[in-house]
Image 1 (cartoon, rainbow, N blue to C red):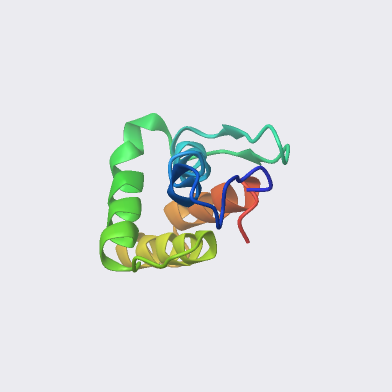
Image 2: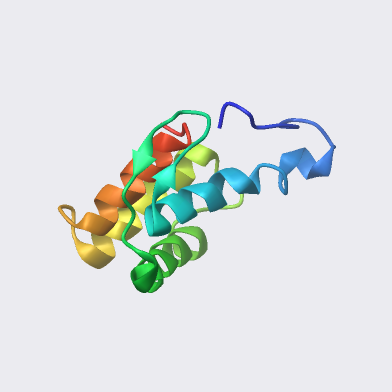
Length: 107
C-alpha cells in the first residue's frame, strides 16, 4: 500500500489499474499464503484448494458491500464483513483476510 501511485491524478484514472495489485495481492496472500515483499509479513492463507472461499468473500464484498467511492480501507472492512457473514467471526477465512490486508499495509 505504501507503494500506491497516481491517487488524485488523471494518470491511469487515478491509479485504478496500477493500484489494483494491492487488492489482488491481498487476495493472493489470503488464498495461497506467502510473504509480502514490502512489509515482510507472512500469511498462511486458506490454501489453493479453498480458493472458492476467497472468491466468495471478495465477490460479496466488492459487489454488495462497497460503493463507487470506496477506498482501500473500505475494501478491507467489506472483505472482513463478507468473511464474517459467510464463514463466521472466528473463522480461518476471516483471519486470513485480516492478515493479508495487514501484510499489504492496509489498516
